[in-house]
Length: 75
Image (tube, rainbow, N blue to C red; front, top):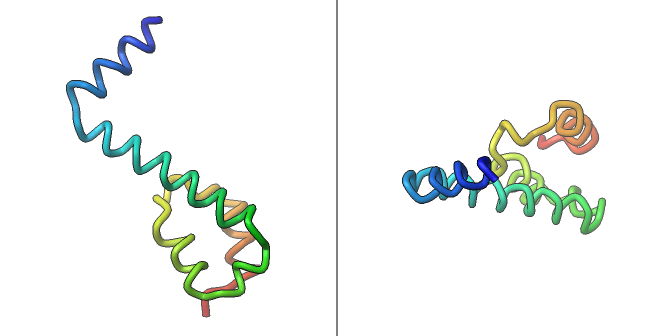
């Protein structure tokens, strides 16, 4: 309960925390949508660029991102 109260106070008192939380949720949803929709989507350069450049770097799990980048190089 203390964790929920602390999180509520942080989100109410610091608007930047709300913005960052929304960005994290959006980026996670967008990554999942692209990866699970179809493996063939990555053959399109635009979708690969959107996937890798709109997602915050700290959400890129190193091995997962590296395997996708090796499988579908941008150039």
